[in-house]
Image 1 (tube, rainbow, N blue to C red):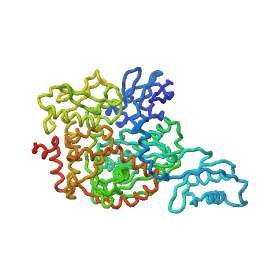
Image 2 (image 1 turned 45 degrees about the vertical axis):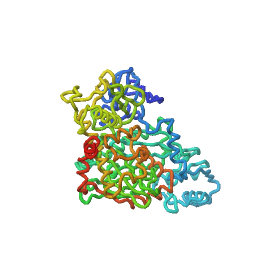
Image 3 (image 1 turned 60 degrees about the horizontal axis):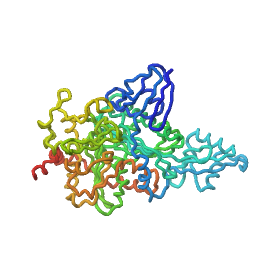
Image 4 (image 1 turned 60 degrees about the vertical axis):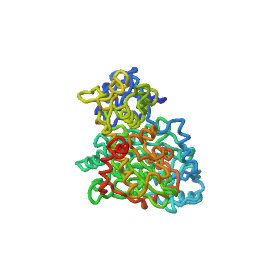
Length: 592
């Protein structure tokens, strides 16, 4: 046996493993998190670790001696200094957690003879103001029975259903937490937040690539894969395993018990929710283009995320086949449903979603932007995290790069490549179609490439570069977003100047330079003062759901009142898309 010492930030764990154990397998088995969307196939190169100050891929490394391994930093959605600011978003919310917690002392000597254990327990809770259902789980009835025969303090977790309460769990002791998990189940990226719902505390967060991505970069390819043999089970298992692993890792890192997690809210597009729950997804993309169900009932957590033995999963409702619960979360996050003026919310992700409207009406659409903005589909792409090139400027006749975390670079993020394209075009390295000019002379393999960093300058000891395929992927993604917004505005006979606010959601908002985005034509020309970055609005809305009864009530109405526009049925959409494939787009080129 060998001793493997794992260090993740300020957290250290030692485990024993057999000789020649694969390092990635060992890390995953330890309960600590490591990003490996390709499943250890050495394709994604995201599982870089450090041993003796040298980088290596965990999936290609085997443990044959006692070693210390430095894991890559958690890709936190919210760093320590921003946590309080994040919670500021919820300061005006009346806290009514979706699952309530009460503490009480049970004194069996006060019992009436021949009274059943459950009737006695029911009477105790009735005195506290809670009318309860009879639990359907035998093991929960057993826990209640044992509790009623021993004088002790207990913590009881309850879910309100109409005017009665369902018992979720009963645990010995007091000062237990009421933990909640909010999940943004994205096509490319999954984001998780761990919260203490009673104290309104944002404890920690984690963001990582969706492991399903190896079976298809977008929802269409995953639906096709799910339709073959055991494809649906494979996709479901991939996500379930990753969520079990990441939730366990978050709790371990923060010295918390998974047993105190009683509520999970999941927000995602319609396809991701279907694949996560194992629902048939075939008709999302085929006639009659129908989801299985728009609003799901409450689900027992251990039927989907088995690490949470006693808790409930709440799923955000969807609007249509390509307009999902992540958009509902975004609307709630920005409070669009209560505003008088007309606003736009755009969630820039693989399945880009756009909604326009106010408190009286809301119209939305979805446009397949692809995963390029989230770093996938690019030769050297990565999410926003330590080592990512997040910004590019051109000054003193050279390109200057901003790197997250003050480290050596290991790839380029979506915001980084947007700014790079802006300056490549401005300095005549590419033309309006994104094709290299004669100013680019380097090659990677047999293809022309613009090299940002040489091998000896990077963490992975490999080139960081972009080629014409990378640029084309970004231009297609930006064309999808721009044309979706443009078409909705035209259908509503609105000019962009009539929009009060443009809310930009998604991970790309962490460091997007709006000047660069406007110059490459990602958005219609709108005053910069009207643009607000709202971060991961899907996750924010999911957190609001866990915290507020008012929000939960609003959602029950909201998803039924949004009008869905299917862009594939709009004859003019392809014309809009083709015109937007240029830098910035054809009408702007002609104006110049």
